[in-house]
Length: 216
Length: 354
Image 1 (cartoon, each protein chain N blue to C red):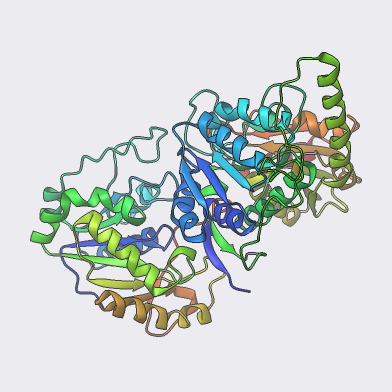
Image 2 (image 1 turned 180 degrees about the vertical axis):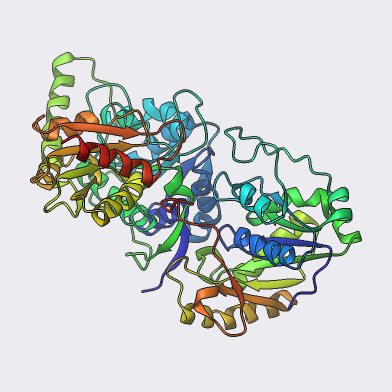
């Protein structure tokens, strides 16, 4: 299903499902024996982020690179990531912060990523209020592209309503994803749906970002 | 019913817009910044005003001015920023103006941390500012309630001419859940029905004055006494509490906001292990649902208060129960979120000690 570049950049609106997609893709790569590194480039979100998965990644032989002070009380978005070295040694999956403000952090790596072969996936969720129409979703994509200096190469349809998502919710989002793709001039890379929903022709994902009252 | 997946902070902002909030004055601070960011995007599209002030103090004083004109308006912040707004809130209360303030709490005191907490309970219910006054406090516990109680906060602030506070925390602000909005369209809101508003007398009525300065002691006393008569009505009409599995409960856990979600998981686990546990969740923190809590503890032998603080709600529980039941406390603070298993362990200890 995937034939992505050395770097796979995951962008999208806040809460579209970026982090969960990044975790699933990384697990797939690691499962095939490919050296993979997840880079948490989120300098915006204080909670519910890739850096929460440190131990989990270690168990699955996935390298993680996160902002120095992620998940601490220090509100400083400091990035000191040797991207070049990571690209030499790993398939790099970048989980970018929400919206164009989060994508700004990506800009400094744009030229390097492009030169090494990069796919930027734009994650959309029909059930997110501010990206409810394809026009709104593409408007945000353009903002992200402007801020990051990278062009998206595919749409990931991750339309979901959290725990209560039904097969029907996913199926009725396909048309929305196609419209987003058409308006953006890029293909739908895949539709993602929770594994237990058994949606045909969808990339099955486990939900690793859990409600806070569930203990790990 | 169309469901949307939203962050708590976004749901608050959208619900405010639909409730007819026309002006938002804010200043960014983690973990409530999404409210500002959302308002910045949405307000211009719906003909409202989003203004990032130069400070929290400025923002609350803009609310003071805007509320004076009878327009629905609000501000939001997180703990340290709310302290800064204290003076303005007191002026708003002293001028009998409706306004909505949101506090998405983080760890304190001082600059504290950016992780979730409930350590502003005392501030919210006792002294959001100086002087003899109270403000309504709603404590939602889900993203859906963030939306529902925002609209209610505006309605009740208008009805009783007093500030209303939404007391949330970082977890509620940042978490995502499906939400359905009660108001399908944006409610019309203007100064009609607010004869006190300073929105232009048009030479048709005497001019209105919004003021909290009264240099004659007996005059100031009279205003304070009248205000507290209004609070008696508020105490009769507004208290809300949700009780869960309390009908035969021997141990009742009292918790509000996000911690009530954790406590619920602990209560369910306790029931599965044969312990008669229940959950009493105050939704209004002022007025405190005293009668409702007492009713929820009808069969209780012990009460456990659990919070993300050092135990700020404990006194209110004891007062509501007139100190007739033993009240114990379990909490985490500084941004640490209690685990349901920790709450369960405390319930078991209390059960065992009977």
